[in-house]
Image (cartoon, rainbow, N blue to C red; front, top):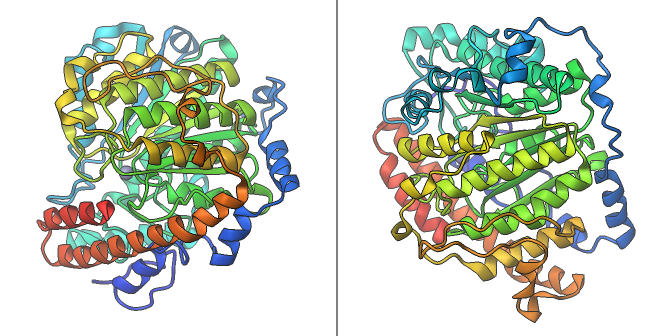
Amino acid sequence: MEQLWAPSHPVLGGTILPSLRHHCVVGSHHPLSWRSILQTYGRKENQIRSWSARCSGNYDGASVSVEINAQKKLTLPDNSLLDSHIIYCTSPALGHHKEAHPESNKRVPAIVDALDKLELSPKHRGSQVLEIQNFEPASVYDVARVHSRSYITGLEKAMSRASDEGLILIEGTGPTYATETTFKESLLSAGAGITLVDSVVTASKLGPNPPLGFALVRPPGHHAVPEGPMGFCVFGNIAVAARYAQHQHGLKRVMIIDFDVHHGNGTCDAFYDDPDIFFLSTHQLGSYPGTGKIHQVGQGDGEGTTLNLPLPGGAGDYAMRCAFDEVIAPSAQRFKPDIILVSAGYDAHALDPLAGLQFTTGTFYMLSSGIKQLAKELCGGRCIFFLEGGYNLQTLSSSVADTFRAFLDEPSLAAQFDDPAMLFEEPTRKIKEAIENAKSIHSLVAGWTLPGGLDKSGRTSPNCGAGKCTASWSPALVQPRQMLLRDVEEKTVKSICLASSLQSLVVSLCSFISHLDASSFQPYLALSYLCVLL
Ligand SMILES: [Zn+2]
């Protein structure tokens, strides 16, 4: 195994040591220590108020009209933008492929096929649904707003070696690979997001209901850190688009919602000290890459504009309805973004092979519909989704199709795809505990209600908004901050650290094995599940 370019953390020895160090909460991506964790929970009230002030935008609805740079020439004429409800770009990256790897080049074609079969494609929808074709790749300058020049040029130079060797594995990245087309195809995927930013922002100036954008692209981006690739991701597509929206269109405040089952550590890192970008991630507690702890809230000027909500294994539709009502919507309403970007990973689906949450097609419909409403209410409808994870081709494509239906204000067809028999009881106590912790840390007040969704019996689950979640809480959960501090100190941090370390060890060992034999993903997955359960 040869190292191509500098990883985001020093290599201490082979694959295992840096991975262990990275995944353990104490030595995780951000410079947290036991002391700083405890200090976070002991934060004085005036500091909390300071966060609230920083996270509260003074939206005047006019920032979009402040253009810093000249408008680029758009691929679509203005009248097409006015008529459309959805615009999307595809970048399937067919040449970026490794046999038996879950992040395969079949993913985007599977989605495109499903959209066509389910009559959601431009062929069936005319001007309602538009695909932007022949869009430009991102420039190195665009990507360099997020990633280091040394990483970008290092990847470009590695392409000639990939051409000779066919495929290069990148040490300590999750496992991430590169082929001779990876550089060009990754620039194209980042370019899709930039093109959609141009189109959506332009449309928002032409009328009150701009189309929603969807970048159906790969390789995904939310794990890629500023200094390198990670976790199947090469360039941070959503991070590049966020910076582009600020620099090209003068959109000051960007909200990024990441509902992939894994923490979007790359996006988080890129904006950890930026008060103008609010990064909110829901993800499975203890899953790859081990970052995204609830007490990681940003630093410096950006303290309070990062919100991590790790959910326990088995969390599903109920959990996300609660999370949306009580955390996502209030955060957005307080931050008042100029645009909402979404890291739309579909690997939290109950049937996805890479994690252990229990989202359904209906959960993704609910999230898409809710985020669309938030964008309409808060930022003139400017909203773009970016494909991240999702490795069961069937559930991935049917869930993206239901996202399209949500964008079109059409009823969900989730009942055709979701089988209640695949679900088991959600760990409601742990879910409520996590949500209450996030609300407490970020001083959030619930105020949003969405219709109920599917529960494990196939019945509609109850609403969670407007305090309904908290109404059934155990009194023991309503406790002063000092109690939370003790709880975190004695239970959560230690158990998370232990689980992360065990999982990291398994991931590292299996990553090492998979480099010897590419077909050895299954034992890796089985052992990962085991560690998540632990
Ligand atoms: Zn993921």
